[in-house]
Image 1 (tube, rainbow, N blue to C red):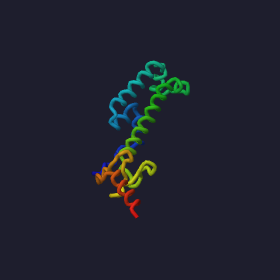
Image 2: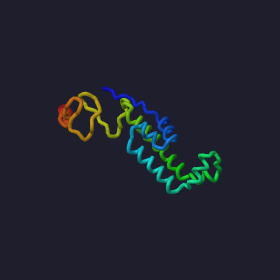
Image 3: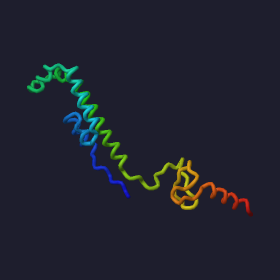
Image 4: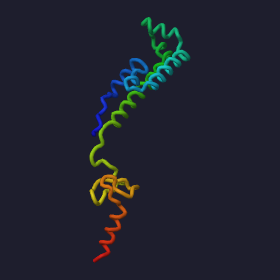
Length: 146
C-alpha cells in the first residue's frame, strides 16, 4: 500500500509561526512544541522587554529604539519560524514515497535468485527467502566442476 504524500506546507507553517508564535507548530500538530515556543516567547518578553516599549508599539508610535527594545521577543519568534519551517520540510521529505532504484549501491547487494536488493547483513533474501550462503556455495561448486 503506497504512503500518502503529506499535505503540510512548510511556507504555511512558517507564516503561521510568524503571525503568532506557536501557531506553525499547531498546524503541524506538534502540541508540546507549540506550547513550548509560546511559553518561551512570553517568558522572554516578560523578562527582557520593557513594558513601555510594548505600549509604544501598541499605540503606533514605535521608533527604531523601541524595535531594539523588543528584539528578544523578535528573536524568539524568528527561531520559532525557522523551527516550524524545518519541521514541516522534514515531514514532507519523510512522507514521500521512496524512489525505485535509489538504494545505496555501496551497501546494497542483490539476490541472485530474484534480483531484488537485500540487506547485506542478512543470510537470506527477505523477498524470496532464499538463503544467500547456500547460493554462494552452489555457485562456487559450479565453478569448481569443469
